[in-house]
Amino acid sequence: MGKVIAVAGKGGTGKTTIACLSLRYLVKNGYRPVLALDADPNSNFGESLGINVERTIGDIREEFMRSPETLPAGMDKISYLHVLLNQVLIERDGFDLMVMGRQEGQGCYCMVNNVFRQFSEDLAKNYGYVIADNEAGMEHLSRRTNGRIDILLMVSDYSLRGLRAVKRIYELINTLGLHIETKGLVVNRAAKEMDATFLKEVEDMGLPLLATILEDETLMAFDRKRQSLIELPDTAPSVIGVNNMLDRLISK
Ligand SMILES: Nc1ncnc2c1ncn2[C@@H]1O[C@H](COP(=O)(O)OP(=O)(O)OP(=O)(O)O)[C@@H](O)[C@H]1O
Ligand SMILES: [Mg+2]
Image (spheres, protein in one colour):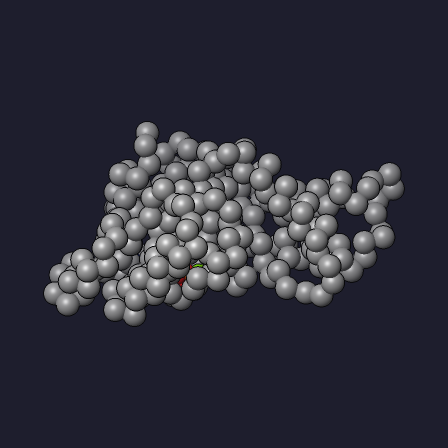
């Protein structure tokens, strides 16, 4: 079973970006293949990786529930679901992407959910690392849809509200008793010189500061041009920040 790296934090703080740069690090450092898992219902992990996603797990679930009787000849429901699930996996150089999509809908999904759970457990065995991009907030942690997490990057921007959101996430993890080997704060879009009040607040949070990632013009230009963040140069400040963090966190 691969190690799972996940992100959490307030909306718009840079979770997807840091998931992309972590994927970039792993792919470029030979940990291939990596599984990129988009667990945000407003999926955009693919977009940031320059991938046009046409089908999600949510879509095939809907398709399957709408017409469960139209199975290809000689195939039972479970094998057919496996065929569909495999179609959602997008293969790229060094990594695969799977997008969860929207999970709501009517009807009983138990059978589909069970097949999916088994499928994703089996799938994760093929990778040394899984990187999960999550929606904003804490819902995903209380639902624990990601299962085990080995490294949790709790992302804040350079704001007190961002830090407070991380604090609440950290408290929730403790309340739920989730065991996560490595977890800590990542300050993103940071300035070279930061306010004393902000730094004091970071210190008082009592959790490890895993990285400080600078506001990065090159990254913003890539984002505007919809260019894959995998292609960012090694010299981009955001890339340097994430690379330094993972050099420390990932045992070679
Ligand atoms: N270090 C950085 N420097 C400059 N811009 C950044 C940096 N990190 C992220 N951004 C920009 O901030 C915006 C939000 O980033 P991102 O989509 O990664 O956040 P998010 O936490 O995933 O948002 P959401 O909660 O909506 O999923 C994007 O336009 C991204 O390009
Ligand atoms: Mg995001």
